[in-house]
Amino acid sequence: MPRSKTRIISLEEAKARFEEWRQTRKGKVAIPDELWSAAAAVARKEGVSRTSTELRVEWNELKRRMTVATGVSQQTAPPAFVELVAPQAQSLSECMIELEGRRCKLRIQLKGASASYLATLSRELWESAS
Image (cartoon, rainbow, N blue to C red; front, side):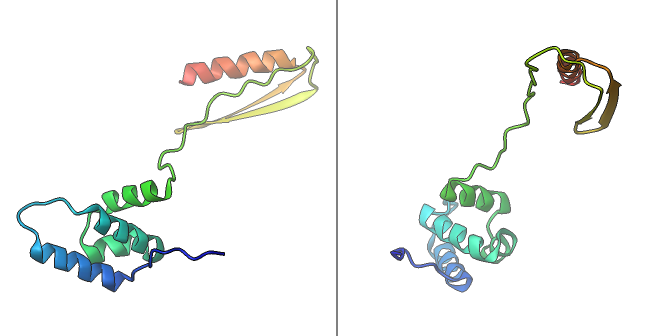
């Protein structure tokens, strides 16, 4: 397995780089991308909280730069409605539907309902909650 050419720096090395940059910068200048990259690499190893504290950088910005560097999305898509389509209008002997939202849970127990009725009921419940 080929080794990466970029050397992973320690937290102490990153801290020294940040301190040197802070001593030599003029005015309010944005942190250079190469320092952010080093901070993100250290944070993957040491953790975001510890790294942001030690390097005196903003936690959210460090976390954002970590995920951008790895290509991982921070946001996950909200669940979408999934409709179950029954091949035939069969009657189910017994069925229980459990719906869970951000604030509540709902459990419905049905006996002798058709699959198409369940699909319609589920869709209407979902749309009324949205």
